[in-house]
Length: 157
Image (cartoon, rainbow, N blue to C red):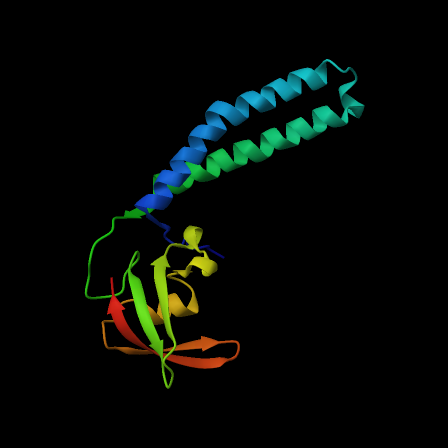
């Protein structure tokens, strides 16, 4: 079975946050962990040294995160803010629920930027897939666990 890689999309804001996190992990966190390992080594027998084992686990997790961020930054498509008539990655979409005055705003983002509380939905989510490629005035149906919800696109920013 061949796994297909889903393309990662990042806004320029998320890219900047990842670059900042990467710099912190490489310059600050690595040094802190090395100091922890050195002080734990000074305590003696490493086979039964909990502080040493914990520092080594933290080191492994940090190195994994560094590799993950580097891979994301190397392979992701960076989406710059721009205006489009169609819903795309980075678009802010204002929708109105059918038969209601209730309006919602969603920003379509890549999978690594999802923040439902802030209205950021993935392009691969049901809402993101329903909205993607649509235009102002289009009606969309979104399948949810509670049933199908119909929206009309009011505006695209």
